[in-house]
Length: 87
Image 1 (cartoon, rainbow, N blue to C red):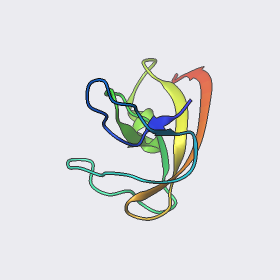
Image 2: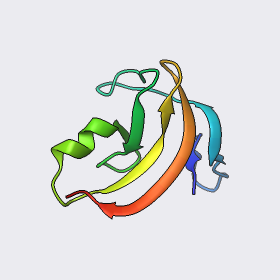
Image 3: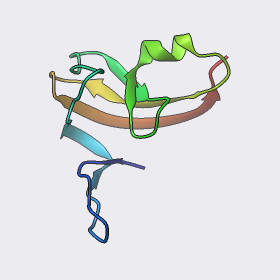
């Protein structure tokens, strides 16, 4: 498991990371990462969300931790797919 760290063009290789510190391209409306915030797999393709977003869903998402914010643009990857559906 990992996250893409580039947006490869058609026919080009994709670079990915599965652990460690990764500099994220952060775009609106999400804003910037918050140090100490736990991030989970987002509900839309290719996104991450603060873990609190899992509380806003009912029985539609699985809790998959992506990592923890280190700085406004750096995420410490520690992917953990729980396999547990949000109640």
